[in-house]
Length: 151
Image 1 (tube, rainbow, N blue to C red):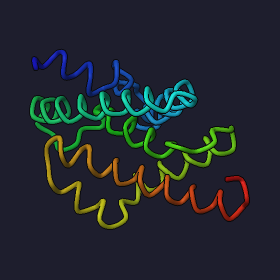
Image 2 (image 1 turned 90 degrees about the horizontal axis):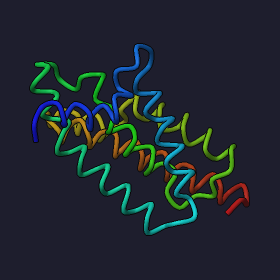
Image 3 (image 1 turned 90 degrees about the vertical axis):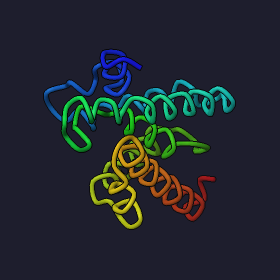
Image 4 (image 1 turned 120 degrees about the horizontal axis):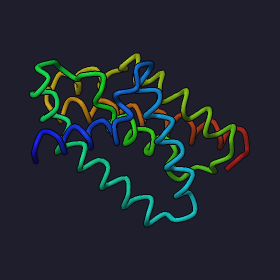
């Protein structure tokens, strides 16, 4: 994959070049994507897999080109993690907002083992810590919604 294409993909269509909070902007794009695909489980899984595979293929190239570990402009990992956060949940506004904030918190605080996954470096490190954050957020929401009787 050439550098220009890798940059386009890893920045999720250049959302990662947003001058303020590019990871938050990409997470919001992930919420929109999840909402648009909410009633189509097979398509949701397919889009998630495409986003994730493209993330693994492009993130490390951009990291190497920029010479910086996990550069802030690489945000495809946030989109992938956000899609995991909302998978198989009833996507009402309260659930989507809670999922968004949970994902951002888990992504920021890197609770074990996500902090160790980030150390893997390259595309693997970039993608896997956000995938872990997405799993944490999804599991938290699954439990909370069941305890609240919403599922």
